[in-house]
Image (cartoon, rainbow, N blue to C red; front, side, top):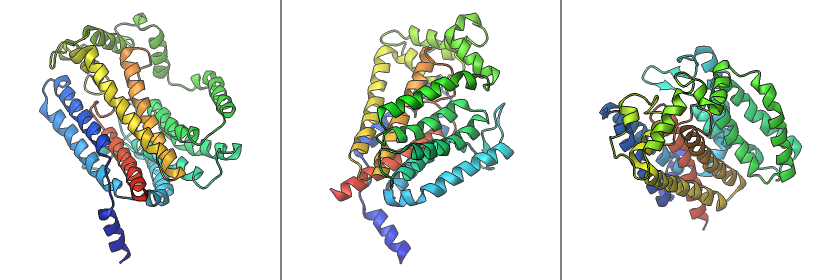
Length: 365
């Protein structure tokens, strides 16, 4: 009877934020269209990505039906489970040069993607019952909650994802109302630790930073990605070369043109006008996320929704900066445009959480 009542409650409550859902659908269509061109009309790439979108959409709808209080009660178990999977990856993981994946037989799975959602959930869960703004003790506990999984991810090594996961948790902490002088002290401490952290980076990670500063120093090696990406972006001009007319990808000058650098293909084909259009679409999605956060009913929902929206902004900014040559090359895909992995599924799952928070607000209005 308890399960029956729970099921009826899930079926009967309002779910989806239509403006946000429509924006995500348009963005997914843009991603599939760009992928078809970047992949030289390879239908299998588009089919695989569409299947990921389909799985993500199913999870979005399912999670949107789960009330935030239920999600909050599940949060510690989800966090501990996803962190435990990182330990399993350290023992049994596989990959090319970096052990990030678990082979489940029917599919390969990247557990670090789970932390992009369970990390802000855990920080929001910890801060929810406590007095805000948080004390130094609470800040230290949150720092530990962030550091453990971020350290395990960095050890794979996957520094880009580790920073994104740490940032997702830090955004939830930032939105908790911390005083600016405390934020300044933390930022200063992190900045002061950079020279020490530099000594622990792998050589290829150091080379990425050096290449950013002077890509022409090794144009046929480490600087190749940035140089070819900038050529693709610049050659698009104002109106672009047109769909399926990206020479940089078709002539194989641009590496990773279906994954990390697919936005360079989009820029070459649709030009400045297309870039402005898709950036406005991203801005609407981010703004809608923050609007949902502002209207959330409780601290957990507010911190979590805000962290998801700000994390989405970071994904767009980092990939866009990387493609434009103003940030180092890191493995951060353009959301719902780049091909691959579980990133699309995890993103849409996160938006399912936002839909749940939005539905909870409507129930109380």
